[in-house]
Length: 175
Ligand code: NI
Image 1 (cartoon, protein in one colour):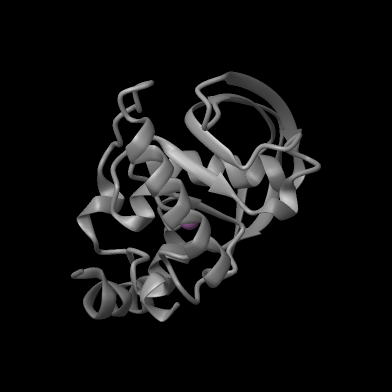
Image 2 (tube, protein in one colour):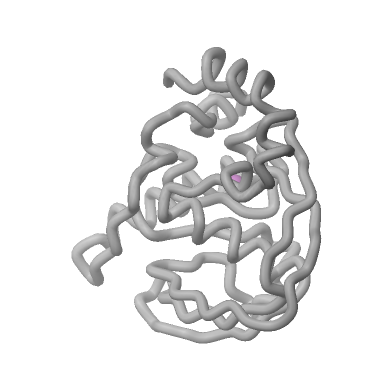
């Protein structure tokens, strides 16, 4: 179980900064199934809300959500090649990330988003979500573009966190 936690990539790891490639059906199906299994186990052990493929070292456009969100997400937990159209008023919420352990900060993002994605069977679907579910998606899709939530903090907040982020990068980032 511990080695699953150790497989989560930490800020400083270059894979977290890459733009991920889209997945192809059915070519990537076997790879996808294995990856989703690994990510599901990792998310469970890490007790996170969501996990994006780059966080386990794979540069592909996929994220998963914890089953806690099943109702809001209409039964979906696996989001492949997601496309977002955020809208609505900006909302302030606290965010954290398994790849930036120990750091939680309030961040402003659009309050709602529409998402179109593909499920594990290769069927595409769309959802319209708000609240925490919207926040989760905006955060996870950023991972697929090499963006971490701390990048979006104000320069003052980033300055205050500089020492802690540097330590994280030095201790765990050089995977
Ligand atoms: Ni994250």
